[in-house]
Length: 236
Image (cartoon, rainbow, N blue to C red):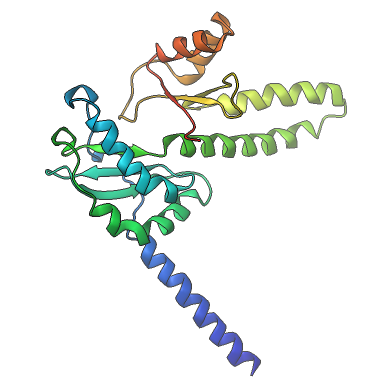
């Protein structure tokens, strides 16, 4: 009897997992950025049409996106053509795909956007996705550096080593700059535009130069933006 019960449970669990997997496949992971449609040009759209349509998309997508970046492509008639979830740390992308799948039909049947958005792409939930990436890097760097520091006998020296090595780990190959904003519990995050091979210096070089120039938030933010970075702000 125990074997039969266990076998039945295995079938039930397998069926549930299989259904979830099939649903998630309706919202694929995104291919390389080079193969996707370009972002719209705000200057080519009259008034606030582009922002208004982006808000409509966000209202339908972001609540299901969690910590993942979602890219939405439009067809020749400026209607939603496809939706994909960008690769990211942890379970964020897979969770977003599962949550978006049951709502896919409603998103695909939204009214078309402005003509200037035809054959263009919208990137949604950028702040939450990048913030999740930063938090994941913090956890990994903390564990990595802690292993090194724990081998030190001199705890004072270990503390200094930890701080220096942790900062180096966080900056290594990072494509963002996080800057604490006055009156906010969450940082402003500066990133390059979502285009292939964005121009300008690496984030590490810009962060170091601008931090040496000033410690005032607005001035440092302007210095960073001057190097081609965009500022992402939390939605809440």
